[in-house]
Image 1 (cartoon, helix red, strand yellow):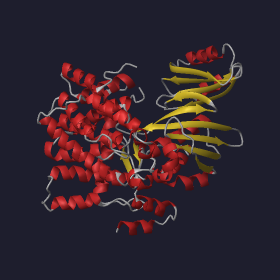
Image 2 (cartoon, rainbow over the protein chains, first blue to last red):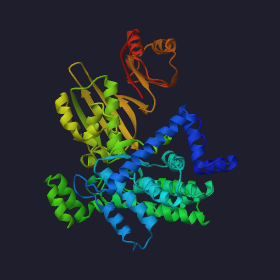
Image 3 (cartoon, chains in turn brown, green):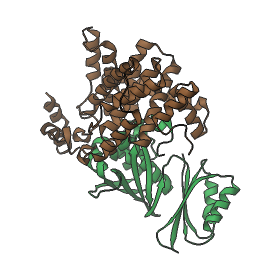
Image 4 (cartoon, helix red, strand yellow):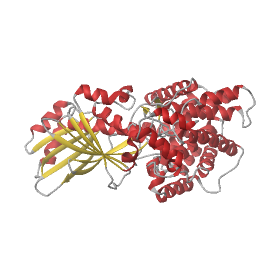
Length: 303
Length: 220
């Protein structure tokens, strides 16, 4: 199959040579591969953007998962921001709260848009709807944010993995955070090369992250991993925009992520047999959910 | 390339909590239903790897049943799929397996009714994307990203040409094709990926060709 890019180097070269945004290259490739019109493709992404926005709104109003393990933290964060004393900055915490909101809705079996997966669905929309308040993008620019994210995710999915079961959390939240960082840079007016630097800096700092969901649920620690993925991507985007570069090229970072995933024990790849899932409390939560079917006892464990 | 569309990455729109274990599972169930050609009356679902370890927490079980009931990844009814299955007369059983499969998220669905049965192996490769790796013992690789026709036929000269001719008469273009057989001279399987959804009358015509025993399709 003919594609316009196989890796980040080709993606950046093409964008810079043709004087185009990375989002534009992604749209052109989608037209080429699927034979669909630009309007159809933009419309589908517009619909996905609406799903993301609605999920955030729902999460910010407060949700609770069936088990009661997660939910309500997005509300706590928004209340804290409103008090005006945040140390890490309002924009960063806003992104964190909106990432958490999305994943709390996901854990509650609500409707979300996977980016690139459901377990990592908070990072890209969370950062987008926080950066929006600072950069005042048009609807078209917000849709482009998703195409830029998609372009980097496309490379990772084909050259490494976006599955926690295959590559650990680094493949899910790590990829999502890198995708968001690249998209933030493009929206802020950075170059395609700076997008690539932001992706590389982000993913380098999420390498080795294991997938160890307590009781096998996409709740603990997934929701908070999305929070920190969002924070990581914003800081990395700022670093790239400041002119900081990655000594290891982006594609090599992706290759390293893939090999780390290959050598990771299956206990740490979405089997709920290792890591946090295997801690005394993690095991107690799992037992409470599946052996007794008693959700009340889980709530008492949290206190 | 396993992932061809940007919407494999930014998407699907789905009911949580897991793209591979919930959305992918729903798609595997739905493809199995499509291949079977109707709603089965019973299903024995074998789960492997991460599917076997975490299916309850991820809603993999309700999503697989939802898929067998023809629900899409974003269908809210996935949450009530067990109750819906009971109403629809679909009996099901989940069997967690310990064998190691090539991919960690694998499900083998054995489904059937009074008329017949079928075995489908589906794998969920991440982000809601799936592949079908086996149908009735035949190894194959079907992504579900394109419409496809599956033809079970006698392993004889001319069968492939006859099917291709029939498609040509209906101006159906073949994008990718694979042929496999379990043993020489016995039964073989054609997997034909095509550019557009196939009308039932085309399938009916193919099923009338000599030495063709079964035709099924997956629409996109």
